[in-house]
Image 1 (cartoon, rainbow, N blue to C red):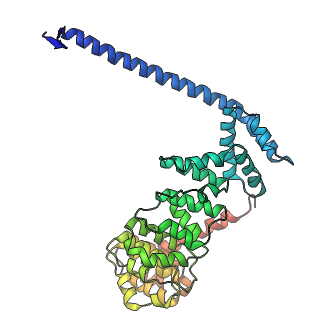
Image 2 (image 1 turned 180 degrees about the horizontal axis):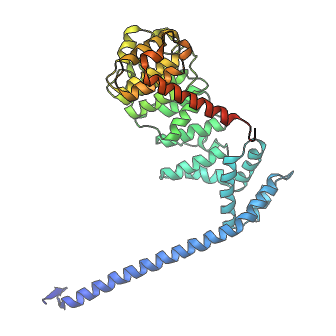
Length: 374
């Protein structure tokens, strides 16, 4: 085996290979030692936490229901590990309790110094650290660190968390502000939490969301538009203000998922005369996508008046896709009191199947509503 010249010295290859093997072996040994040590440390710490958790839970509840909780005095008597366990218990109880008990518990958060630590973490470069800080401030209903700092949400998650914080603490000026914080300038879709936050903000007054959507929907990415449409489908929609052309326009886009979501949203707006255009409804019921046609059928059933039901019935007579036919007929069965024609005769097996399942669902709901042992 040839030798190798290293820094002017001739070194046998065997020596180099042995040295490399020793370095690799030493690295593996050190890595194994560190891994085992960290595992043992975490196990010991977890065991200690589990051992002291019941006593700390009992102490927390004793102070919670005392006339004077004295959180400051109790926290001062705790070790560092005990404070960490108490903090995890506080997180658990603040998510479960409300009213006076939750308000009293927030004093424990103050005693643990959580708002101060959260305020410092708002400027951390890691997004999850910032989100954790916002979550704690929301649980404690303590928005001051956000309001008094230069913190600006950088991601959709942070936007939703910041709006949720202001809403929970009663510091959100109005619905329009919340909608603006969530949607202005965004080019990303929401998380599930963000979508839920938008719904909670808009449900009491949908007008700002409808107006924002009308102005900006064509600039949004399709996933975000689909999420906003899903929110609109569940809003209280008796408001008489707001433009709906954006909804009808969405029903005629190329993306079938967007068209279906638009039909779901329009199901809540059937009382609007502007939606009753015959040509528009004929195009909607003739959509090339069975998924969209099914959503349109459900939209017409949700409108529920005789004209809409008539259009629905005649569209189902022509429907050839089994799934769209089943979904449309199931929706129609729920409006059978509005039908002048013998639907069973014209829809045949689809009507019989849907009516049978509707009856089964009704009986199941009635049984579930019966008192236990009744």
